[in-house]
Amino acid sequence: MKTILDNDPLLADQDVRFLRSGVPAPDLIGTVPTQLGQGERMEDDPHYMAEGHDVITSGDRHEYIYPKASPVTYSVFCTRGGFNPGELNLCSIDVAYPYGTNVVLTARKYFPGKLPEISATFELIAARMIEIAVCLDVTDTPDADRPSSEATLLARHPDLSDCRILLTS
Image 1 (cartoon, rainbow, N blue to C red):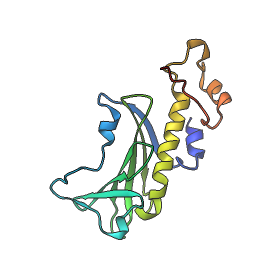
Image 2 (cartoon, rainbow, N blue to C red):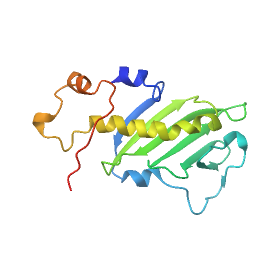
Image 3 (cartoon, helix red, strand yellow):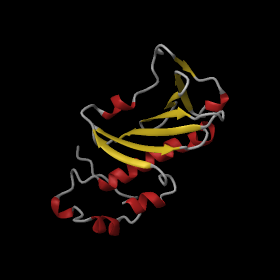
Image 4 (cartoon, rainbow, N blue to C red):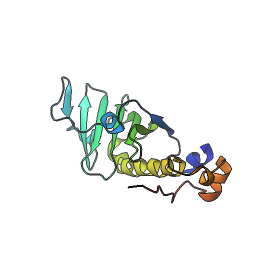
């Protein structure tokens, strides 16, 4: 699995985690707040803007980023870097797994670049994590059809893509 992630053009150099939470994933992902809290404001510095996203700054180092329109439920949290305007220390993308109520997918990258330059990849990264999770999801798969090992899974789907979930009605 590590080899696949390390060679994935969207997920290389990222810490990827799939987590089960006691809270519904969409509640953890969040949406643009209707009312800003103390110390929060809509970002207006072009160094920290993200095309297609609303950016909320909290304090002077934290950015909360929400897509304006996306078929994928995700949000991004970034921390600002040191001395160079626009530099980020860390960005973490949280994605609600659409086929499991309490499953959150997370990709974290240190020193990812500048927000205006990297924001176009957020939705692509979120969608790729869902694609991988679908390949790993055996929740409704009959025991006889489940891959018995990582090697069997990778033989069927070498790059963990083109997997399907059969939804029951």
